[in-house]
Each structure stands twice: as C-alpha cells, then as structure tokens.
Length: 354
Image (cartoon, rainbow, N blue to C red; front, side, top):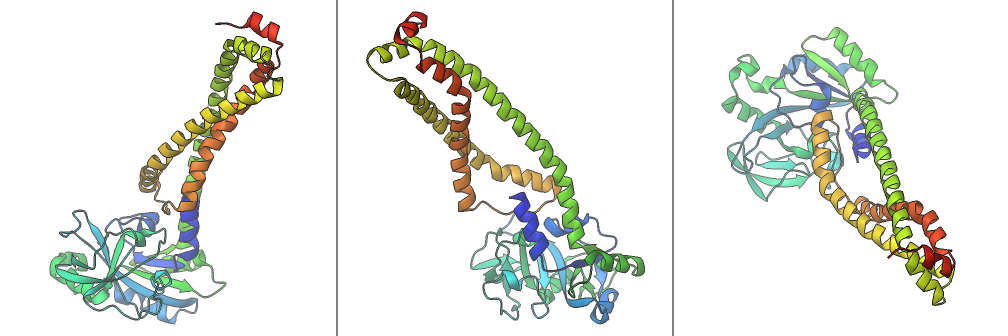
C-alpha cells in the first residue's frame, strides 16, 4: 500500500514543480501529502514570470485556507482553485470536461465525508463532484472557486497574513507542468537561485526522499518479521515434536487396526492444516483490523501517501494468513509426523505414552 501510494503520487500528482512562499512553515513532503493548514502566501506578481518561461507547458494557481464548521469539528483544508487553468483536479473527476465551479459549489476529496449540501465558509454549498483517490493531501481537501476562498480570507483571516493587502493579490501555491524532457529538479534549482520570496519544490525529488527514508524503515520491519517467522517455526517444531511423541500409542492402535503408514501420516498432515488454517484466518482478521490505523500512524510520522484497502488486497490478506500458517505447521511437523507414522505397531505401542 505504501509503495502504491508513492507511485500514484509520483506519476499522477499532475505538476512537476510547486511554487510556495519561501517562509513556509512545513517541509516539502508535508505540503504535498498532509492536510495541515498553511497561512503562508506570496504575492501574485512573484510568479508572473511563469507565463513566459520557455520550460513551462502549463500552470495553475491555488489559494489555501483552513476552517472549522458545524459539520466538521476538526479543521478542514479548503482550497480555492481556477478550473479554467486547472490540470490537477480534472484527471480525477468523472466529468473531466467541467469548466468552472459556481460560487456555491464545491468538489471534495474521496476521504471527505460529504452530503448534498454542506455549511462551509459561513454559507451553504452544493456538492458538485468527488475526486477519485490520488494518494495525496487532495484526498482530504474541499475545493471551491478561488474568488470565494479569497473573499472568506478577506473577511475572517487576520490582515497581517497578507501584509495588510487584499487576499486577491496573493496565492498559496503555483503548480507547474514542464514541457517533455525538462528536468524538474534543475528547474526548481534555477528558480530557487534567482527568485526571492518563493521556493520551488520538485515533486520527483520530494517523493524520492520519502522513498529513501522509508527504505531503511521497511528493511528493519522486514528483518523483525523474518525473526518472528523463524521464532514461530522453532516454537512449532518443538511443539509438534512433543505432540507426535505423545501420540505414538495412538499410532500403534491405528496401525494394528490396519491403517497404512501413508493414511496415518496424511491424517496428521490434514489435522495440522486445519489447525494452521484456523489460526491463519484469525491472524488475517487481526491484520485487517490493525492495518489502517497502523498506516495512518506511519503516514503522519513519515509523511508518505497511501491508498485505501481494496477487495483484491483484502482477499490476498485473508488467503495469505491460513496458507502461511499451514505451511509453517507442515514444515515444522513433517519430520516428526513421518517418523511417528512409519513406526511399526508393536514399537509404537511399546514407546507410546498415555
């Protein structure tokens, strides 16, 4: 899931470079993948050069605000957008030809609980559309007309955030799509070296940093899982060895009744598979219950994007538990079960314990 979220974000975020205020309070990864509110803005004149830059293919601006309302007791990130120039939202809309938002309409991310109409920005808005899952902070964001967001900021946001000016002359971010073959990191470095008051973030570089930081963490987790599997194997080996020793007299009775060595051995294997399957199903259910909260904690800690559970992944987890549990059971018990099952009836009766 973590890897899938990173791939979605790298391939489909839309923009190659994001311009933000240079005095921003968050790391680049937090800006891209979290929904923490930001109150850092830059003047529109800071990015007028984008229209004439030979490396730029498309660009769009956004204006962020943070609100609390009656429907959501916690903060919501509301983003003002211009659908005419937008290329970030449209690929994630069922109606990709949507040209504009009315002043009383909003678009929601897939993780935002919505109704047909909601009280946002001190007024009632109609729900226009829901984005498909993106793996970024867009999944927990509400999008409105940029003019509406700016007007709300003018009325309810302290003026010092805009240096006493009108919010209509400010942006929170400019998203840039470069022409084919143009390097995003080189473009970002050029902007950062020449422009004051704004900072350029390379999307690919940010996603790569997240991947690098997660690589070490995943390696440690993988080593711990391997150690746990080895410990489980050794514990099962000791348990089944003792169990087979205690059942030698039972084997003697079965063999004396005419059961072949193969049937006795297969009965042990079948019994072990049942025990392992039931244990594996319980383990799979525990994993399904804990995986989402665990990923949420890791996401907040490492600022990585993720995708939600889907039916394919759920089925894989449910099947993997009993298969792995049964495999470990058979592997750890096969030798002792074979030795016990192939004993002659008289020997088994003599060595068996009641």
